[in-house]
Length: 306
Image 1: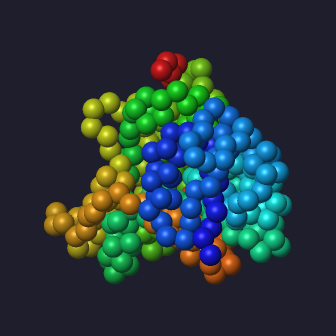
Image 2 (image 1 turned 90 degrees about the vertical axis):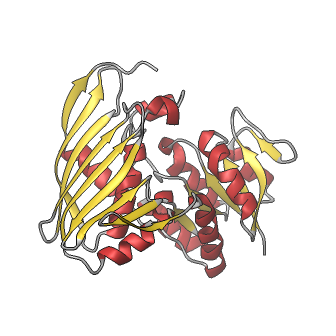
């Protein structure tokens, strides 16, 4: 069976990543679009999710809308008997997602909270490498220019938009995938522009269950070279993940690297989950973000002007 998919929210991430990956994935085909301000020729186009659901003719939706509305949209899609793929972050709160898992089970449908950075080519090799090492410390530098990667996306500065945690959660999704032990937040300082409700930078300290320190810096104000790096100090040298999980070196020697095919892997995973009647709803990265807002000291910085 070929899954008939609709994209809800035809914005930057859908155009940059989802469209090409859907086209490249066997077992799924793009059938419709629901978006207030965009459409695609040759497809059924709807202004709202409600209009899409009323029309029928689809098996699944990929929710690429801002996180503030995703949980409600997912609930409506599941109630309509559809499988649901959630862009990251899957919603603006953890508690909004918990009833959805039960709803998916009751409906016999797949619910998939995607973490695209976990599918970067060097992440699985890093996990295997670190499984046999004694880890001494971890440092994360996740710094990018918001004007380049999120132009005109005002929702990211609103409550629930996550601010710098929108990219920073990618680092957390990798850390929770590659480190052999769970970890928890011990300290956080969040920098809020005086005209924004979400942070533009964050300094975080974690410790794993063995007391290993983990430090992370997230910053939306980076100009020039962009940084998406995780360095792990081990008993056998430094394990370094660079470019968001695309390149892995071990004590300076290249171990793994490859092209960016994260979203292709996401859609292969989605097709597989649907075929097996299973869901994948790991919320750990979002829980770490929620902890940062709970524990973080707030610092007001200069206003953000795009």
